[in-house]
Image 1 (cartoon, helix red, strand yellow):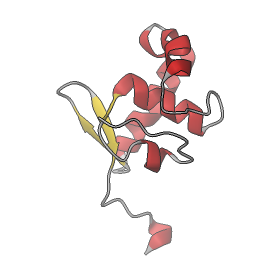
Image 2 (cartoon, helix red, strand yellow):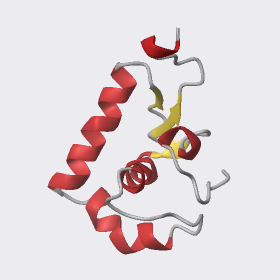
Image 3 (cartoon, helix red, strand yellow):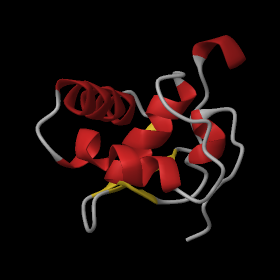
Amino acid sequence: MKRPANFRTLKEALADWVDADVATYYLACCLGLMGPEDGSLHKFRDAKHVFWGASELGESLGRFLDTLVQRGVLEFKTDGLHYRWNSSFKGTWEE
């Protein structure tokens, strides 16, 4: 799985299937909470306790990803817990 470097949007970061904890980290980067990510995941490793443990921030970001799945923005694969951008998603503003 190729790691995106210097992405600006969640759509770019999740162009391919990404592990749930990394997807949550990418969301944090896109929101300006962490990052920017350079593709090495060094900053993710420093902050992995936020995504692997009981953390209010990590849990909030995870719920937001799940909401994006419910709205059809993201796809979720339960075998291995992966997220990716739904390439067929079109917002009502794009019609």
